[in-house]
Amino acid sequence: MDLYPLFLRLNGRRVVVVGAGSVGARKIGELCAAGADVLVVAQEATAEVGALAERGEIALVRRAFADSDLDGAWLVIAATNDTQVNRAIAAAAEARRLFCNAVDDPPNASAFFGAVLRRPPFLVAISSSGELPALSRLLRVVLESALPEERWIVAARALRTRWKAEGTPMGERFAELVRAIAEPISGETKPRGA
Image (cartoon, rainbow, N blue to C red; front, side, top):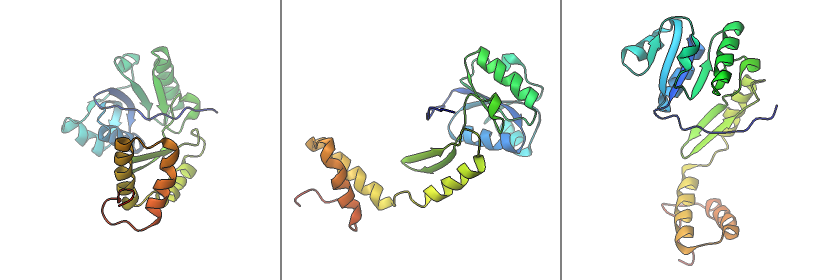
């Protein structure tokens, strides 16, 4: 399956999550962290999801899914363990031209979440197209150990600032960055010729 990787800015945008069990709760937490306006539709909810609703961090509607729940949404997550319900959610999303992530149900999904690794300013997501989520998670752990040290990030930021100010051509930047991170750095990267 060919997928197009994409990172979404969901701050203030409505995301509908149908289902509020343990998997749904994890997705809801991630969406809240991204600043999404989260509407949860579920007949039952974990205590964690209930607490989020009580604090006003999400809207929780305790009933079965209705197509109209998707009005005004940017993204839909079907986090139920019922394939028929997921199929109905996916069909309603498709009719509204909304992407739908059906958790652990690839045939009913038009969007897939990756295993995510955050080390600012880096955000790495790994996807197996919904086929091998556990292996995606393992790859995330392996990649985490390969991400740059803080000193690399400091060096890269300092170099980029200087490159922009000096108009350094793109072709010259990579080799200089490699040299800068290959030797121990204390504080900011020294300017060339210093």
